[in-house]
Length: 81
Image (cartoon, rainbow, N blue to C red; front, side):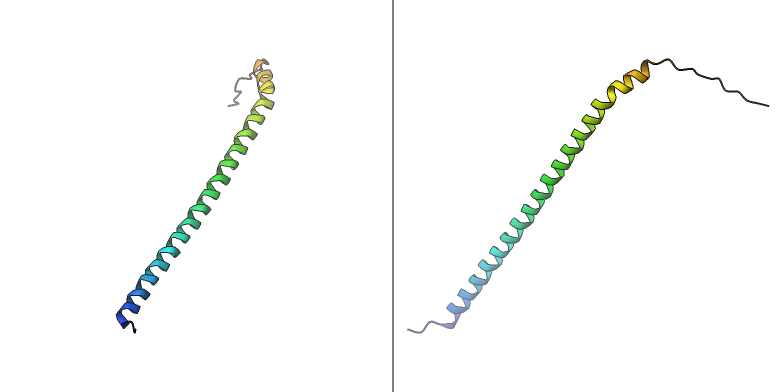
């Protein structure tokens, strides 16, 4: 039996549509994966910055407390006219 030409054309069109859909889904999945990786890296960076600032604050808190408890001598403005 010989198949009509329009059946082969319909098969080719369906195959092209399926391949295009698979390519689009694959590219979308790759784009989402890259976005997720970038978001995780940004979150890790922000966590490291927050930890570093907390350590700096903890290390300098006694110094700031000591400096704020020390009396300061304030000199008035002396203007020569």
